Length: 113
Length: 115
Image 1 (spheres, each protein chain N blue to C red):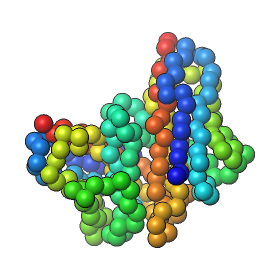
Image 2 (spheres, one colour):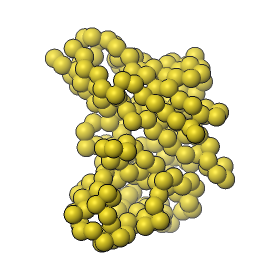
Image 3 (cartoon, one colour):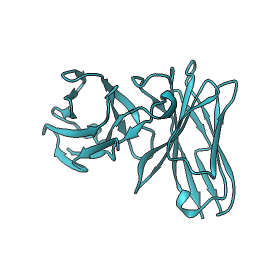
Image 4 (tube, rainbow over the protein chains, first blue to last red):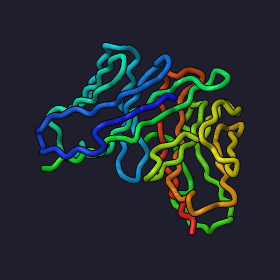
């Protein structure tokens, strides 16, 4: 069964303390891995799409990387406003040529000032 | 602001009732997805419509149904509601829905409380 596992479930950092979030997946034929940010009570906000192993993408203090089995979201010198839940997702094939969005449970990040 | 709108923001109803959630996708987006998010289940994909037709089905209960109208807005109908249906329901849209390599843009959600 296609699965997405994120770790850690929760992470507390001090402002400026860099760290990484992990997303491991078991998907037959990866066709893209997505990272989203979700603030409490709000809809997820798209961050990155990674298509192939070795690919990297950056946005402000965030950098996402992809290997054949996992993806990392690196947060450099985080600020309190980076506090949120970070979700990763894949879209493995389903029936009839469809794709089934599959999300991990997320990593809840809190950055203390 | 993602450009995806959802109404209502909050809905409180009783067990056994039926409700309709509405979603308007971003201008130009043909694909609409519905999700349920609860604390114990995370973000669960329910169903996808592409240009008016059902495209993909996830863990959607038989009590739930959806449709996408010619103007591309979508409605999710939840019937015979149970306490366990209380959750946040999100709609998302994407420019097309025939490839896996397409990101989604989420609406603000509808918080459903079943009493």
